[in-house]
Length: 166
Image 1 (cartoon, rainbow, N blue to C red):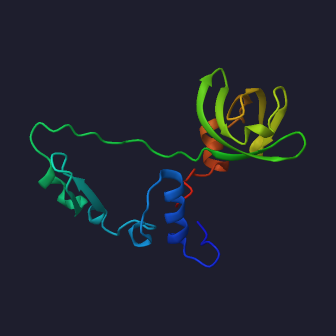
Image 2: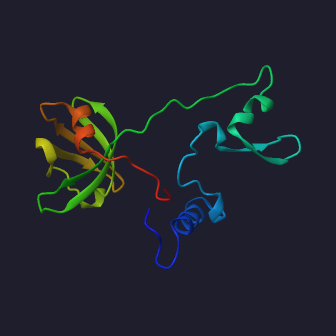
Image 3: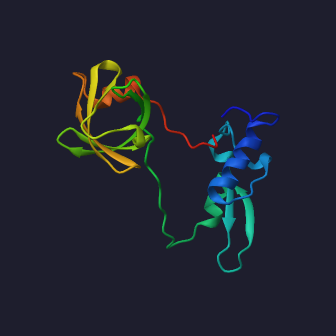
């Protein structure tokens, strides 16, 4: 994220976190770059019984895990599904592709106020998408995918959707 006028990127990130999540985060606590050693990443441990907060490192995790604890991992990956298409009036529309609904139909999120049911959007690589419907926040598109298929199209023309504070 570019630095705000007269401030640092960390200051802009801290302001975004406070605005979005209601969290007051000191600038020096925002990780803008990953740790060179992944297990050196910071870890905040909350003792549920007392509410005590302990600042630790990921490498300290074994000390906090007990027999019988439930371990939940997040194996999800971010896909490059942020795209920019054009309306018939040549307006650029930013869309985040959420999921395929089946039958070459997709649910998207983004600047759907620029979309009109029945209109056709165009994208790079010969992508065509007809707007089936929209509710102001989400839209459904009927897509004529390029010959390479949608996964290859996203890889070639999509961008990683990143939170505004990164």
